[in-house]
Length: 190
Image 1: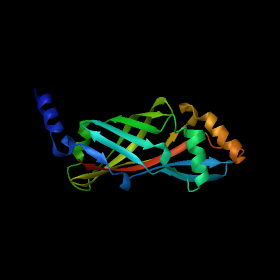
Image 2: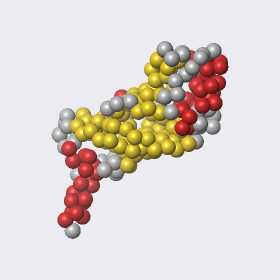
Image 3: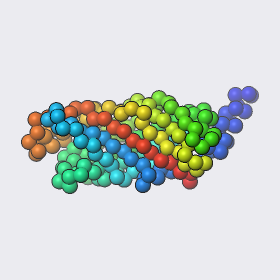
Image 4: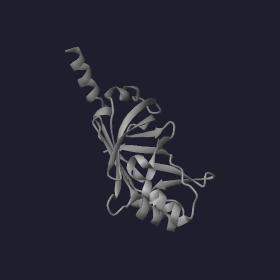
């Protein structure tokens, strides 16, 4: 009975009970690529959407919104790497423990946590691990960001042919097979 009462209190607390929606304009999602073992560049996705409902979080990444600062490279990534006609978005889903919100009662409070998430990219799903920091920015706003880069391997998602095609088109000797990813996601109460 005591556990049930504690669970009810947690799930009805103001922070946990609220549903949250991602503020795309305030959020960033970046990845890095290294070509010819010497040149590393930071790229981003401009269009994100997502929400936290109860203890479930979801992030949708519009792959057509990739921005590399070079328009022709954007187009090549969309067509040859991500194949946006067939796979227009990537999706990340995560389960959050209700107790993580306990430490976020005051503005400025934060909590660090390791998480497991399911990434659906290019028609393939894989569980990934991340270390996140969640900070309460205001009563109606919080931010979740990576504490360290998440390393993704394109081959785990069937992206190797696309990487090879990009190397061929750009006449590169190599493109790194490890892709560091970082993000800073701002959520607001609905």
